[in-house]
Image (cartoon, rainbow, N blue to C red; front, side, top):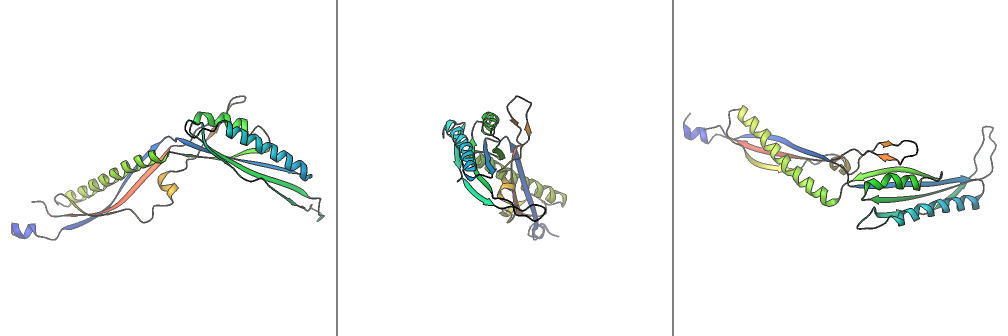
Length: 229
């Protein structure tokens, strides 16, 4: 085969997926608490529920500062009260039981303040921790995501170059790059929420050990490569 024919041979198409990820500590914690009271007297249930809810609201307001924290944002749900007439094991309908429920969430920028605040807010038996959502700020997310996007492209180029070299081909030339149509839910892909572990000793504030926030990016890429000269 002549050199001219060799150089004009159809290129080999190489398709790869490039991936990159990074794990970082969370910067924000959204604490979710629930206030629930049950009883036979509606007035008493409403009073106890309202008192417990007001204590939680006062605690959220006391720490609220949108700029300096420790609580940058908070919200309280409506106090709901309803009743039901249960049945016993013998099929007898019992007197009315009243239930109440309300929720409150508070977002912390100072993660060291989370444990002590939860201990204070849940001192009442009617108040319980429903969960904590750990996250990073939007600006941090954008910065890390952009870095992972660049790294994912470099990973794709590196993979394609290895395949081309193994086939005796020259350098690769990109022809197409696209994000996968489905990578899972946004939270699963970008690590918006992190799980946590609780640890506390008697008489000490509750401590939390959140798992790192994982930012993950993938790209599908196609390259062309011709036989090496």
